[in-house]
Image (cartoon, rainbow, N blue to C red):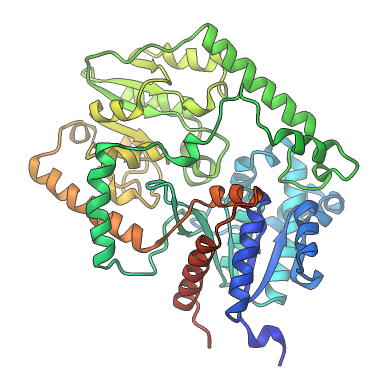
Length: 478
């Protein structure tokens, strides 16, 4: 009997610096009787996996198809890609729009690359008899893999931070970004929730993934290494669709720095007034999966803000706060056009978001963590996409997907004491379930520690045991 028939096969979607962490998890799963294969978009990590013992038969080198995909006509590429589109899932065009590097290429190249990659992925998953795929949802090819796996009846799961607390992560359904509940909350989980919620409210903490993002004007030490990789004779940027070409990266960095400098010199922002009733909207960074895929119908934030400003009664203003970690991502002209709307204020990005949440009559977000934070604080919040924390929103995005449908008067009315008590219980139940179905350790931090040679074997063991328990629950062996 073949190795594939004897052992369940798991596929990992290689994702840049997270790949060493994925490899350590794969090693531990293989020790428990699983067989691990890899989908690899770039030459750098394909070489690294080969050097660390992954045979050619266990790696799908997608980067080898990047150049040859040019042979496909646009019509052929679209016809091929169409077969993977599914009802209630975003079309391929949305995946191309979300991908922050693919969208910089000519439109035809995006379709050609995804069509060629998709055909190879479809064949590889079938030939390897993959039971489940694990990866992130950063790039279009990863999302495409999820669509193909779903179409073939295979599992595909993305690991991501649960946002609050940011140093826990769980397995999410692709595209919909719903946390997979595969364990029932126990007494220990409820005790954790009962302790965590009041402690977090007393001292709310900015999520790690946001706090760790430096200004556009800040120099990163790893840039020297990246420059050598991109300009060297063995540059990965030539065929890896997840590596930005050097000149494009430089141009984008200069744009961010130039805009950030102009916004500091000629600020369109104003301090938050001490009084007044308002609805708070915190701008999202884009492109990104959370807004360009999960919240795709509302990804044009300028249009959304104009609509929201028209829906508010005269008693309220719309306060808009720029993302403090992406100052410069939007031009001064874009921001001034928003500030010019009749009942809109553009609030200083340096203002405390938590202080604004405590004062807001309503917090609106597309898919942002700010809505989750507001809900945990007991403040009315509403989202435009039904993500995993949708049960905590004032109204469900599944029932009210468009602001035109919102019961605005009810949303702006303070909740009764009984409603506040129900919400408190819902928050604790939600956190208990979240704790039961998540693991310690933020993926990006684990990747950084591994890069620096500081990996914690105990953390990897804990996560591997969790993945094994999940696989035994979701995909029990025959």
